[in-house]
Image (cartoon, rainbow, N blue to C red; front, top):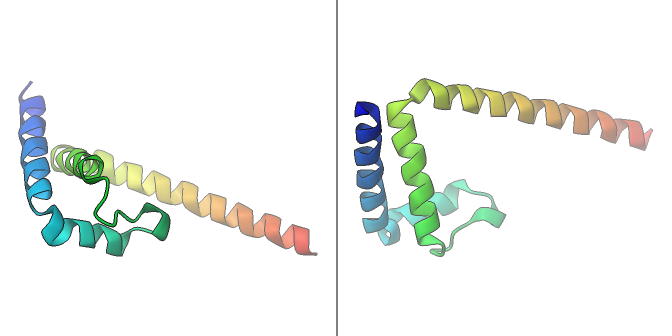
Length: 93
């Protein structure tokens, strides 16, 4: 129960500060990091604020789980890239 309470407090604080600073830097920071299809251009404010708050609170509470998910996604992405490269070479020859 304590972990849930800490997570909720972290979520509320991160969401509040991200929403408060959306126009002054959060939106521009996201636009610099995201590919063109996902750029916010100042829109979808509440969706991005909630997503950032969930990721931030979860990272604060369970950083090892987040690290393992990132490592797993990186490995899956590498395998997909290698398979796509291999399939591309098979098609052109």
